[in-house]
Image (tube, rainbow, N blue to C red; front, side, top):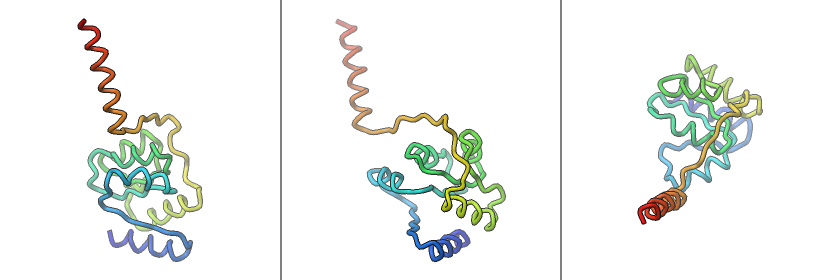
Length: 136
């Protein structure tokens, strides 16, 4: 959204830090981006499953979302700050809070196990091997 881009450009100029926006990020780069990010801003109105929210929380990012679709369910579940009206002033306020470290802390109850293909393969093989031993 062009309004959000203007907001971010103004904040970047004032605060002197780097803001990057991504649309598609290869899975191999996600861990690096999340671990180096102070917060995740997710103004999407189309994200159907909320996977970026879960990923951001898994990497200890503060997450700010638009209050819509699955976003509102996850925002409530994990006590995430969300833009309810999607107004420019509301986004500016949330972004400033994130930059200054004043966002309310997300749910401490978030438990996760990051999906890693190698770990999945090991887990799958241990299940298969255990089942094979039971058949003998």
